[in-house]
Length: 151
Image (cartoon, rainbow, N blue to C red; front, top):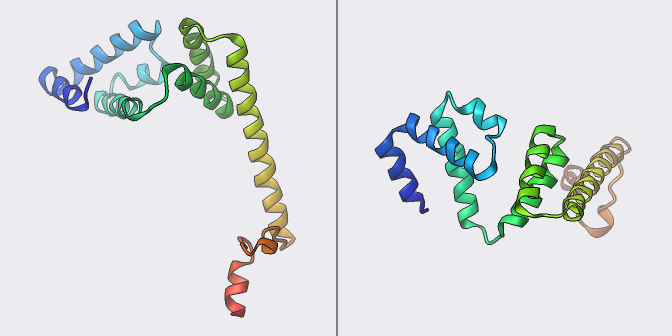
Protein backbone atom coordinates (compact mmCIF):
# COMPACT_ATOMS: atom_id res chain seq x y z
CA UNK A 1 0.00 0.00 0.00
CA UNK A 2 1.26 3.44 -0.92
CA UNK A 3 1.73 6.20 1.64
CA UNK A 4 -1.01 8.28 0.05
CA UNK A 5 -3.42 5.35 0.30
CA UNK A 6 -2.61 4.93 3.99
CA UNK A 7 -3.24 8.63 4.66
CA UNK A 8 -6.45 8.61 2.62
CA UNK A 9 -7.66 5.57 4.57
CA UNK A 10 -7.07 7.33 7.87
CA UNK A 11 -8.83 10.49 6.66
CA UNK A 12 -11.84 8.53 5.41
CA UNK A 13 -12.30 6.26 8.43
CA UNK A 14 -11.11 8.65 11.14
CA UNK A 15 -8.14 8.23 13.45
CA UNK A 16 -9.87 6.12 16.14
CA UNK A 17 -11.32 3.59 13.69
CA UNK A 18 -8.12 3.54 11.62
CA UNK A 19 -6.08 2.80 14.77
CA UNK A 20 -8.40 -0.09 15.69
CA UNK A 21 -8.15 -1.48 12.15
CA UNK A 22 -4.35 -1.26 12.24
CA UNK A 23 -4.23 -3.10 15.56
CA UNK A 24 -6.49 -5.79 14.12
CA UNK A 25 -4.21 -6.13 11.08
CA UNK A 26 -1.13 -6.35 13.32
CA UNK A 27 -2.78 -9.11 15.35
CA UNK A 28 -3.75 -11.03 12.20
CA UNK A 29 -0.24 -10.66 10.78
CA UNK A 30 1.79 -11.48 13.90
CA UNK A 31 -0.69 -13.42 16.01
CA UNK A 32 -0.58 -10.77 18.73
CA UNK A 33 -0.41 -7.04 19.29
CA UNK A 34 2.93 -5.88 20.74
CA UNK A 35 2.69 -4.24 24.14
CA UNK A 36 3.73 -0.79 22.95
CA UNK A 37 0.93 -0.75 20.35
CA UNK A 38 -1.58 -1.81 23.00
CA UNK A 39 -0.32 1.05 25.16
CA UNK A 40 -0.72 3.52 22.27
CA UNK A 41 -4.28 2.42 21.49
CA UNK A 42 -5.70 5.23 23.62
CA UNK A 43 -3.64 7.77 21.67
CA UNK A 44 -4.49 6.98 18.04
CA UNK A 45 -2.48 9.88 16.57
CA UNK A 46 0.70 8.55 18.17
CA UNK A 47 -0.09 4.96 17.14
CA UNK A 48 -0.88 5.96 13.57
CA UNK A 49 2.26 8.05 13.14
CA UNK A 50 4.38 5.22 14.59
CA UNK A 51 2.87 2.72 12.15
CA UNK A 52 3.09 5.13 9.20
CA UNK A 53 6.76 5.76 10.00
CA UNK A 54 7.44 2.01 10.30
CA UNK A 55 5.65 1.28 7.03
CA UNK A 56 7.53 4.06 5.23
CA UNK A 57 10.84 2.57 6.33
CA UNK A 58 9.82 -0.89 5.13
CA UNK A 59 8.46 0.46 1.83
CA UNK A 60 11.71 2.27 1.06
CA UNK A 61 13.87 -0.69 2.10
CA UNK A 62 15.43 -3.26 -0.17
CA UNK A 63 15.75 -5.69 2.74
CA UNK A 64 13.60 -8.79 2.73
CA UNK A 65 11.25 -9.53 5.65
CA UNK A 66 13.51 -12.26 7.04
CA UNK A 67 16.46 -9.86 7.28
CA UNK A 68 14.27 -7.19 8.87
CA UNK A 69 13.08 -9.68 11.50
CA UNK A 70 16.64 -10.83 12.26
CA UNK A 71 17.68 -7.18 12.66
CA UNK A 72 14.70 -6.69 15.00
CA UNK A 73 15.89 -9.65 17.07
CA UNK A 74 19.45 -8.32 17.20
CA UNK A 75 18.36 -4.83 18.23
CA UNK A 76 15.94 -6.20 20.84
CA UNK A 77 18.75 -8.33 22.28
CA UNK A 78 21.21 -5.42 22.26
CA UNK A 79 18.68 -3.15 23.98
CA UNK A 80 17.89 -5.93 26.46
CA UNK A 81 14.16 -5.58 25.84
CA UNK A 82 12.80 -8.95 26.92
CA UNK A 83 9.27 -8.27 25.65
CA UNK A 84 10.53 -7.20 22.22
CA UNK A 85 12.97 -10.10 22.01
CA UNK A 86 10.35 -12.72 22.88
CA UNK A 87 7.90 -11.20 20.38
CA UNK A 88 10.42 -11.07 17.54
CA UNK A 89 11.64 -14.62 18.21
CA UNK A 90 8.02 -15.85 18.05
CA UNK A 91 7.47 -13.91 14.81
CA UNK A 92 10.71 -15.30 13.36
CA UNK A 93 9.66 -18.85 14.17
CA UNK A 94 6.29 -18.26 12.47
CA UNK A 95 8.21 -17.01 9.43
CA UNK A 96 10.26 -20.20 9.35
CA UNK A 97 13.51 -18.62 10.51
CA UNK A 98 15.70 -21.26 12.12
CA UNK A 99 17.04 -21.22 15.67
CA UNK A 100 20.56 -21.15 14.21
CA UNK A 101 19.82 -17.95 12.28
CA UNK A 102 18.20 -16.39 15.35
CA UNK A 103 21.18 -17.38 17.49
CA UNK A 104 23.55 -15.79 14.96
CA UNK A 105 21.61 -12.51 15.15
CA UNK A 106 21.76 -12.64 18.96
CA UNK A 107 25.48 -13.45 18.98
CA UNK A 108 26.20 -10.57 16.58
CA UNK A 109 24.20 -8.20 18.78
CA UNK A 110 26.10 -9.37 21.84
CA UNK A 111 29.40 -8.90 20.09
CA UNK A 112 28.48 -5.34 19.04
CA UNK A 113 27.26 -4.46 22.54
CA UNK A 114 30.51 -5.83 23.95
CA UNK A 115 32.55 -3.75 21.51
CA UNK A 116 30.48 -0.67 22.34
CA UNK A 117 31.07 -1.10 26.08
CA UNK A 118 34.80 -1.55 25.53
CA UNK A 119 35.11 1.36 23.09
CA UNK A 120 33.17 3.77 25.29
CA UNK A 121 34.96 2.82 28.49
CA UNK A 122 38.46 2.79 27.03
CA UNK A 123 37.90 6.17 25.34
CA UNK A 124 36.88 7.64 28.70
CA UNK A 125 39.97 6.11 30.28
CA UNK A 126 42.17 7.57 27.55
CA UNK A 127 40.52 10.98 27.99
CA UNK A 128 41.28 10.90 31.69
CA UNK A 129 44.92 10.16 30.89
CA UNK A 130 44.84 12.78 28.08
CA UNK A 131 45.95 10.08 25.68
CA UNK A 132 44.84 10.12 22.06
CA UNK A 133 45.46 6.98 20.04
CA UNK A 134 44.41 8.67 16.80
CA UNK A 135 46.98 11.50 16.96
CA UNK A 136 49.42 9.24 15.20
CA UNK A 137 47.00 9.14 12.25
CA UNK A 138 46.54 12.92 12.25
CA UNK A 139 42.93 12.63 13.48
CA UNK A 140 42.71 13.79 17.05
CA UNK A 141 39.38 13.66 18.89
CA UNK A 142 40.67 14.38 22.37
CA UNK A 143 43.39 16.94 21.79
CA UNK A 144 41.78 18.82 18.88
CA UNK A 145 41.22 21.96 20.95
CA UNK A 146 44.80 21.90 22.28
CA UNK A 147 46.16 21.44 18.75
CA UNK A 148 44.01 24.32 17.43
CA UNK A 149 45.29 26.64 20.19
CA UNK A 150 48.92 25.85 19.30
CA UNK A 151 48.39 26.69 15.64
